[in-house]
Image (cartoon, rainbow, N blue to C red):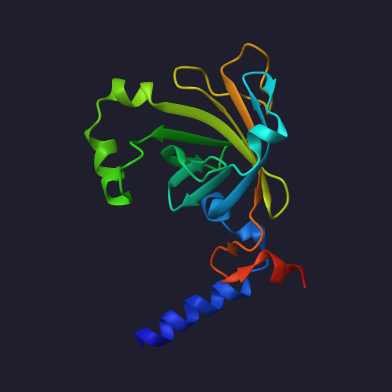
Length: 179
């Protein structure tokens, strides 16, 4: 009986696999992403600054890496996809924290500490394999549009799915999806 229920649930997931709109925002964010463009507080980042920079999203943890694959930033995040544009809230966690420690660390912080380490932003998807993230540095207001004006404390990035990265839940790669 349990096997039949599990099979039914997994079959239902396969039936909707090609329908990206049925996936939650969090499901669509899962995987490894290349940063293809960026604006840092109004300054366009050069190709040289961005080359090799990646973002990895696993469950509710987002981690950025530089071209040498050295970890630069780690945060737990929540997405509110009922908002338009979708809201994302990211709270920095120590780079050495393991996923099991991340949840405990977040609970142990005072509200004041969490606010100093929290960035609020917006995001949108641009097709199946691309998304745009715009967020304010800690202490600044959540942006309302996808812009990073000069002198602002707003960051803007466009991310594209890494070629060969599995599409979440399908076990396929982007290359095999193009066939």
